[in-house]
Image 1 (spheres, rainbow, N blue to C red):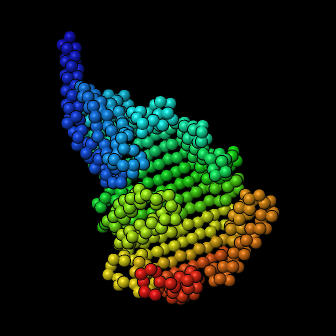
Image 2 (image 1 turned 90 degrees about the vertical axis):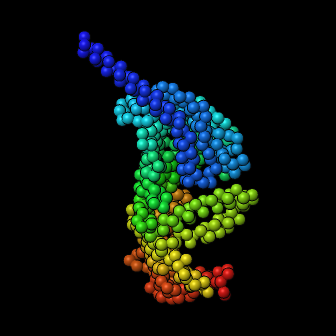
Image 3 (image 1 turned 135 degrees about the vertical axis):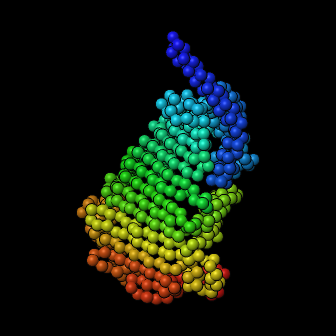
Length: 500
């Protein structure tokens, strides 16, 4: 009997402790809500300063074991310059917060790690997201469960519900069977990991001939393990994998791409960022014709982190301002001109640190062979005291140390590729092969005639090197102005603002 009383006493004591701890956690959450929202707004402004979005919270109701609140996302601008949320509209997240140290929501998942809280989040049906609710049969398309540790770290499991949207008037349709996302971050938002799995997406629209075009994507997977460099640049490892992407026009297959895999890895040392970007495509078919497979490998090194951050911030801000400027986005020629000006004005920021870009290789391969392009470019920081350029050679030397490129086209591979192009256009295989052979041989002869290419071992080859005003084209050396005059048709004319 005494043992039973002791056991009951222990259970009661634990219950009192748990209740007290849960009540205290709820009180601490309410006390710190303002700070949490301020931190979220600071991070959002740092990551997307032109978004003009602002978070706030309303209706915090604290209980012993759980609390509720509404988190509101609105535009901080009173004009129509924000495409995501119009002034007066809002995106509202309904939050149910289970208090720690052992939130009920986590216990139901058999997660026994002590936590400050577990938050279940879903959308509220407002005008800004009304279409999303219609697509998900009246449910919140986003369902998220977030564990908040006592140190402030978070881990979110996000479920995207299946959606189906059909516009009978335009013939447009979007459907997805949903997916899973997982996001975790430390208390400062420095280290962020992400993974996503979307099984299938389908989009139907109409082309310029008013024919239905169906795009489908299957097996999309995303992964990222990132952190901030000391300068505030997000670096780390990221990957994307897509099993299959297809397009069909009026029920007839247009193209099928299989096995698209991409990955990147970036690191920072002594305020210089370096990394690699790799893409590969296992198979491409166009109108049931096999076009082969390709890959791209890029290596970047010696990029100044502060320069990259300044370029990113300036470029994004100026592009957003350009898009909001009346009459620019509706005029493609003016838009392209202004975009080029924005890029040119900010490009020197990317050249700090004398960065190096290597493409090794960009290649395409089929059953008959492989063609490749390799390029190595070593840039120069134009702000290192170089004199005002007086001609095109000095202007190039101010930003470029060396360049070395080589293009190798397998004639057998190119002939096979052009054969499939002709067959996709309706030619019979024999006629397509004969036409392709003539085309490739014609290109090879023309390239040699204009001294653009050479022919080596049944390959069409072009090589180009540059250093300190001298160009070597296919083994022939010449000054830059002579090269421009020969190959660029008037390239010897000085840029605007430079003496003729």
